[in-house]
Every structure is written in structure tokens, then in C-alpha cells.
View 1 (tube, rainbow, N blue to C red):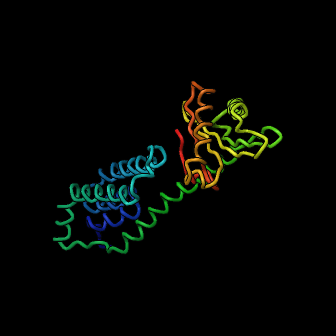
View 2: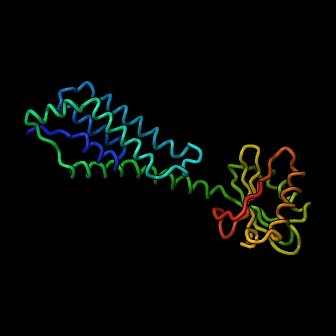
Length: 245
């Protein structure tokens, strides 16, 4: 069977679709054809490490969601192209000049898609499991005859702290007898982040916002060792219409 090789552009295409893992596979296959078997193992090791760092970083780097979606693939794809040229470029040219054959783009597309599935599937499973565990940890407590509700994550903040927050809401008059209030409390280091369900008027009229500003000031006095932050939300926790810090 006649040997074939992957060109730098084909490696670029496969990497863009499937990530650094595909880079490792394609370059490792080239090293086999180029009679450099000692570099195959190292190529795989580096590509696996790069994959873990890049995609693991998506979960741990702060504000990673603000980075444009195309930027990270563009960066690692450009790096893959550079590495292919640097380590194999001249040898690929020599191989082709001596009558060697190259793989078609379609093969890189298939390998790239397989690589994408290998990478994305564990991420989907991890995200699903994380979300499921998190949702199981979320509970709520109600207070007073109006059943004012505070929802919270048991793995994030203790019940005693939630009771203290509720006590603060009672002292400030937020938990009153007029209307049931719905809140979600989350702790971030020394910060109590309180999401309060409200309507769109708080973002439209200063008069509607003023009571929440005063409430935040009153709560801050009751919790001098904590920073109190209010998220005024509409319909769901992600729809923050106003943040009071």
C-alpha cells in the first residue's frame, strides 16, 4: 500500500474542526511516513496536554464567555499550522517532490469531525452532570405567614447564613405582610449576592428602583463584614435588569 501524507493546509483544516487532538493524530501519522517514529509518542503527549489545557480552561478561566467564540479555535489552529510547517514543512515538500501522495481534504474533514465528537461529548456529559448535581443541591426556605422564599445552593451557603439573611429582610421590612417576595442568595467569597424577583419597571423608572437601593443600604448595615450585592431579575435568574452594588 502506497504511503500518503497530510499537508500543512489539511492539518489546518482538521485542527479547526477537531482541535489539538486532531493535530496530534495527523502530525503523528506524518512522522510515521517520514520515518521518524521517535516523534510519534511525543506528538501525542503534547496534543493531549494542549487539549486538556485549552478545553479545561473553558471551565476555570474567569469571564471566558466574553472571549469571541472564533478566537480560541483560530489561535490553536494557527499554532497547529505553524508547528506543522516548522517540524514537517520541508520534509512534506520533499516527500511530494519525490512522487509521494497526499491525503484529500475530505479525509481531514472526517477526522476533524470525529475529533470534535471525541472532545465535545465528554464536555456535554460533564456539563449535564454538573448541572444535575447543582440542581439537586438547590433548595429553599420560606419565612412568615406570607411564605417569603429564599432559594439557595446547599453546597454554596449554609442554612444558618440563609436564616440570618431572612432575619435581615424581616428587620428591614422587605419581608412584610403585603406581598410574597422571592429571592435567591449566593455567596462569593465575602459577598452575599441576592437575586430579587421583580418586574421591568425597576429598570425604567428611578422611583421603582429607589426602595431597592435603600434596602441594599439597610442590609449592608446589618452585615458589615459582608458585601451585599442585589441582582434585580425578571422571569429568571439570568435576566438581570439591574445590579446594585
